[in-house]
Image 1 (tube, rainbow, N blue to C red):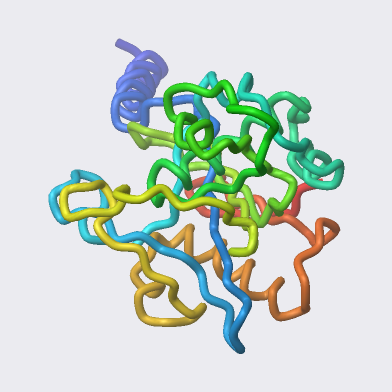
Image 2: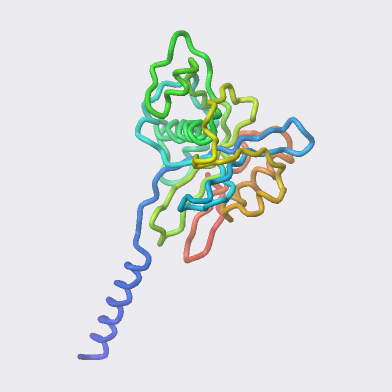
Length: 249
């Protein structure tokens, strides 16, 4: 075998090992909702403590969130997302169409209700025709209301992970909570405790590094006054094995 052939063969073996070690999984759309209480001098955010026996991040404090479901595209809403939020969600390449932008915001509201029992909705005439994960809204005579959401950041899980997500991090003021479902938080649930904690406090120091990055962005924006849709939206992603921070445009 010539030197050239040997080099080519080694390259193929190396590529194969890299592919096995770093398989490519297309990121799935996901959404996280960070609820903020600004009634005191220092803003507080709502975190939930995960059960000690769950596989992923046992005993850690997290924000409610998860991947987008197909029903998130079809569920009726009490209001549309704002034009400014839709424009922010459309930033980046490729552009996010309006239907997908809405589903991201709706997923954040659904996940928050599922995991914390706190619902962002608006009363409707008659009983809302919602099923499955949306039944708590129907029982309370609500439709989900995404009009109070702001986009804080976007982040994509690095390559080489079994599960990868393209996550949009939303925030909303605690005043947007219109209903509480009792019994969601208990000793055998995914989240065993809900706590409002001040930004910069100890429970937040143990968060996932990417989540801390997003919280730093939120903290900086809150320091300037009321949240605005025209603030820069960072995009955290990995390139060349390193985390990059760009501004969506």
